[in-house]
Length: 92
Image (cartoon, rainbow, N blue to C red):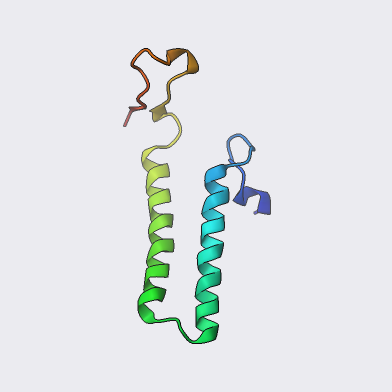
């Protein structure tokens, strides 16, 4: 897997703000956990919260991609602005 896949959208090849900030958050949380572990201040509760946060985020991402995969969400076009059609339409 090329490293650029960590920050780009697979469909468009453009930078993905969601991927960039998710990876920044993961790196920051991991760095804090490592520093706390080295300093001997990492408690079990904090480590479990870290694991739960990373695990839940990954699970939620997989769930969303399965439920809202390609073709299931229709976003309004720019020409629809002000016509009351600003809500995304969910199509199961």
